[in-house]
Image (cartoon, rainbow, N blue to C red; front, top):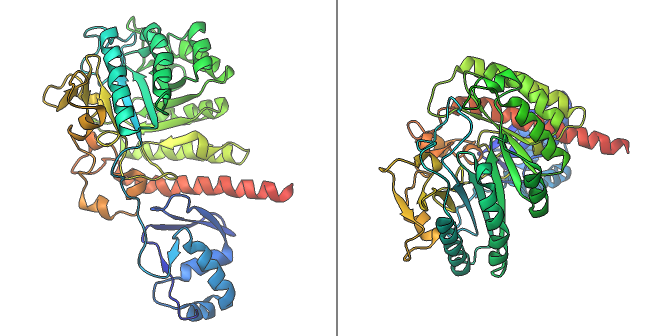
Length: 444
């Protein structure tokens, strides 16, 4: 065994946390993240793909038997291997679940400055006729494809303006799909200005989730997210968000970072940590952003998260940056083009909701009797695999998946350099969280 030559994973990220600890993760293997002590870090640092165990033992001062046991343990999650056959995530041939953005309405009661919906306030909500056909097509697809899980993200416009229609649809859809052994989950992607007690009670009863858009605290939110009258929406959103949390309803917050609100990130970070809700910071797409300021205010925000970790806040369960997948990894950014798409108010299915109103984009109709929903996805547009050579070789390619396919520039995410700076920071904060947990358990 002393002649065995260990090799580090090509996608290995190995960084110190403090003077006594480090972390290691194979960025191509889910579940490989681990904390190392100082000696273990030095051993892994010494692995160079050339020296056998006997030489490594002399270099590190660790006996070969101990060295072998440690490296074999690391090989189980492919942090190292004793050959060159490192695995990478593979795209499955057929989807086992489906995920759809449902454009419930073009109408919205806000007039956000950066809204991308080309059809905003043009027409009304999805009709009962379209909803009935959607359910029929969904049943057909689930039955024929043996789909076991479906997720509907009810969006718009403002989807809560259509609450009564979906209040009827949701229990019927669940009952219909249950007969085929399929579970369907629903969430409202909302500005959260129209919430009432009836919606709260229905959401509790039927386990409905909420995705809420917040751009900052107080005036910073109101600068971009106003009612159409010009009045700010934050006081209403804050009240309703706290109501969802108080009632134990699943809720997460999404913030689009732009030049208009990036200086507000530290204050917003403290606000969201105090509420203890999951939140996602994404960078505005389709427009430029001050890269120097973005890095500075993101760094300040992650510093605040680090302080919160030290007093027990669960970073790994509460925060996501853009579309990065540091724990689950993946072969593409979202479900579009493989197991999902976006369904417009008229029943047309497009690759992404940003394509609504764009007649040049390929689409199919749920009223086409010759195609099920998976057929429509397969025969629709496909942007997901259009990636640069740099992306295909990058250590982080399964963490970032080249970003949103629709907004790539030269086949890569415009924020690539930001990701390279902050992916190690995200893993570092997870390591601090894990280390704090280990120390706490040692004291029990």
